[in-house]
Image (cartoon, rainbow, N blue to C red; front, side, top):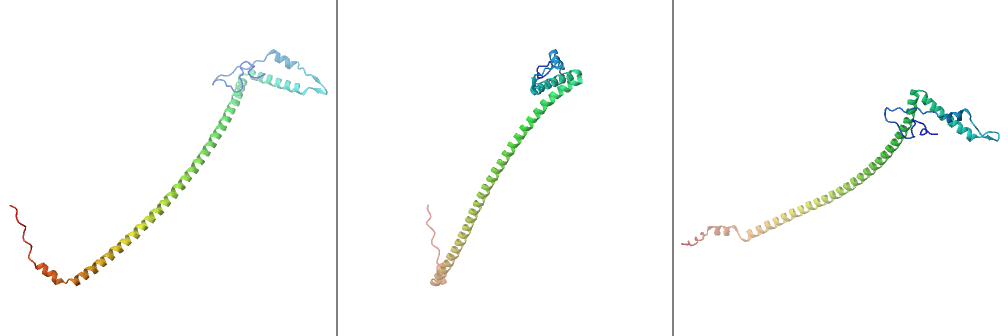
Amino acid sequence: MTTEDLPGGSAPGTAYPAGVVPHPPSVREDELDGIREPDFPIALRGYDREAVDAYVEHVTRVIAGLEAGSSPQAAVKHALDQVGEETRGILERAHETADGITSRSQAQAAERLQRAEAEARELLAAAETKTRVLDNDADEIWRERKRLLDDVRRVADELGELADGASRRFPAEEATATAELPPPPPPPADS
């Protein structure tokens, strides 16, 4: 017999709506007869153990039903015990679900952190490579600048030597004589 068989009882895993107290289960006459006159099969050297265990279980259920029906407080306690078991099961499943969610979230977070660290290492390596390339380019530009300045100085020196050679070949007096020449005539006027 289960609590489903009892009037006002509930199936395991079900609960009464808030504020509703179930009616205490009533005890049927045939159940009381089974308690008043137990019948155990005779077995070699005593009673059959399975029959005695079944009887004790049956009597325990009947007594629980009687206790639940003896007072409203007992009925409330019986209902609370049933709800407490259901609530405990719900809370255990919720806790297991929360643990599973937490474990998955932690694993995902660890994976994302590893990916972020790997990406950061790649970005850092790329930045270091680019910095080396830019440093090499800057060094090359400075070398080219120095070479150009050296070339300009060399050309300036050569032009200075050429100017000195030209001034030795053509003394300054000739330059004065050309400066004393009369200016060229004005161009004819168009009428």
